[in-house]
Length: 583
Image (cartoon, rainbow, N blue to C red; front, side, top):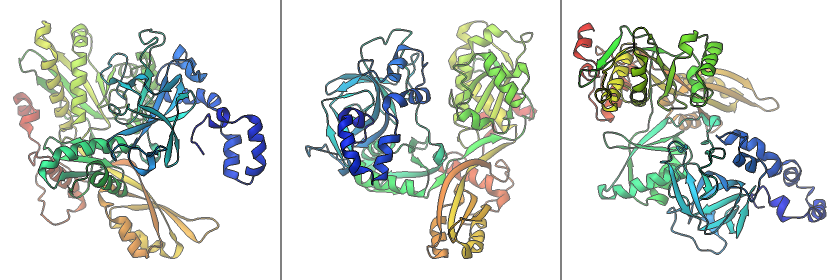
C-alpha cells in the first residue's frame, strides 16, 4: 500500500473504494486507516502550525494550509535514505553504488515537483538574515515509497510523501525545499524553514560516544566520508572531531552505536575501523555564586569586563532547551513577563536577558546585563553586545573543566570599561576576553561535572525481582518503582542508572536472569557527579575503581587526557595576574 496521504483520495474514486470495502472490512488496520486518517487538507493546518517556523498569516502559509498544488513549492524533508540498498531499489532495477547517494523523504505542503526542477534547499541553520546554509539543486527523480521498492512518478503535488533524488548533497539531517522563483524577496511571503526534528521520546540527546580511527591510516579520508554519511542516515547520530584529532560518534545507546559501526564498516566506507571503549558526554555547571567578581582585560589593555556566575533556577534549563522562551521572536517585555511569572525574577533582571548559550535559541545558559546606566555607558555597551554574546556562547560550548558544554548557568555582566574609539573595542578584542571572563566566573562558583542518567524499564517474572535490585545498585543505580503488570505474571521495574555504569548491563541482566528479563533504556536527565573535580589532593590509582567521592576528579582527569589536555585546569589560562593575586 503506497505510503502517501493523497493516494486514497486522488488515485481512487469514491465508487471504486465503495466496491472494495466489502472485501477489506475484515482487515481492521486498513479499515481504520481509510476511515480515521485525516486527509492532507484537513491535517495541514495542524502540521503547518507545529512544524513551520514562520508566521501562519502569510501567503506561503496559506498555500500550505490549503494544500495548493499551484502555490509556491514547500517540502519538509524529514529523513534521508541511502540509495543502492535493497530497501530503496527502484522499479527499473537500476541503482547507484550502495550508500553513495541519498533519497530525501519529505512531505509536499504546497506546489508541485517533477524531474528536472531547480529547487532551493534550506538547511536547519538557514534564516532570512543568514542564508549561508542554503544551496541550489536539480531534481533527478521523484518517487513514491512502496515498502522496499519505490515507484518513479512524473509529477507529485501537495499532500504527498515523496522520495526526491539529487538534492541530498547539502542536507545534514532535515531540510526545507522550495522553488527558486516567486516571491522570495517579498517581505510578506518571506520563506522560513520547517523546525528541525526533536525526539523527546528517546531523551532528545545522544549522550554515549565512541572514538574511532581507521586500521590503515591511509584510509582516513574514506572514514571521514563514511562518518558524514552516517550523520545523514541516523537522525540522532552526531559526529565530531576533537582538538586532539580523534573522531567521535555520539549515539543514544550501545545497540544504536553497534548499528552505526556496522554500517560504517560495511555500507558507507567499507574499511576496517578501530574503536575505543565507549564513554559518555559530560556537561559542566556551577552550584554556587562566584566567590568574587571576575574580570579580564583585553589584549590592548583598553577594555575590561567584569562578570559573576550563578546556577539557574531548577527546571529552567529544560524549558530553555525545549524552546519555551523564544528570545529572538519575543520583545523584552514578553521575555520579562515569562521570567517574572514562572520563576519570580525581579523586573530589572527579567528584562535584562541578552542571549542564550551555547545555542542562540535553545541554549541552557543565560547571559544577563546587570550593569547600571549611572555606572556604564549603555551606548558603548550596546556596540560591543554582539562580540560579548559570541564570547559567551563560545565559552559555554567548551567549558573550562574539560571542554565539555556548560549547562544550567547564569552569567551576569556587572561592569564594563570600554575604549572610546571603535577600533580599540572590536570583535577581535572583545570575543576572547568575554570567553575568558566567563570561564573564570565559572571556576570561582564551585564548578561541577554533570553526567547523563538513563531511565530504565525492566520487565521480568515476579520471582526474580529481588535478584535484580543488587545488580542495579552495584552500578550506582536505584529502583524507584516495581509493580505487577495487570493480567500477567510479570513485574515492571523502573530504575535510574548513570550511563557511564550502564555498559554491559543488559548482557549481565540476561545472564543473571537466564533471559527472563528485558530492559529498555532511555536518557532521562543530567545529575551532578559526586566529588570535587578540582581537588588536587585526590590520588587516583591506575586500574582500580575510584570511590564514589572521587568520581568527579577521576572523570575530569581521564576526559582531559583523552582530549590531549593537561591533567589539571590551568589558572594562568583563565585568570589575569590581578585576579590570581586576589585568589
